[in-house]
Image 1: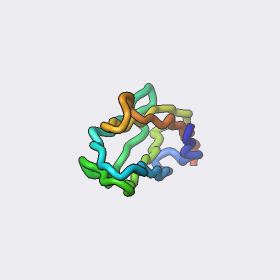
Image 2: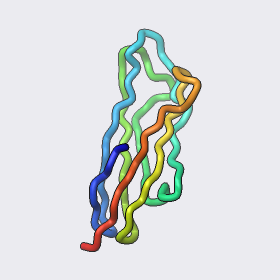
Image 3: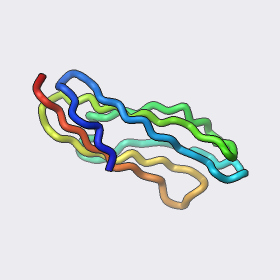
Image 4: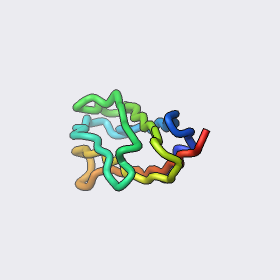
Length: 98
């Protein structure tokens, strides 16, 4: 599980992850999505191309922006043609009163 630490309500905390293609052939990056009961407190941005070339990588940034002083969890799924099931990253963050 990736923990985005504590973030003050109305502030943000960001985690950066790397998606790597260690093979020589490209693979498709079909999509990234957030799910789970706390998904609304998280957002993602990335610089992943539709086709990730061999021996290269791209960056995925996940931001936690709590609207209240509670813990939230979510899951980031990355669909690629390299695996049958999406790659996933479990996320957690806790909003704290400033």
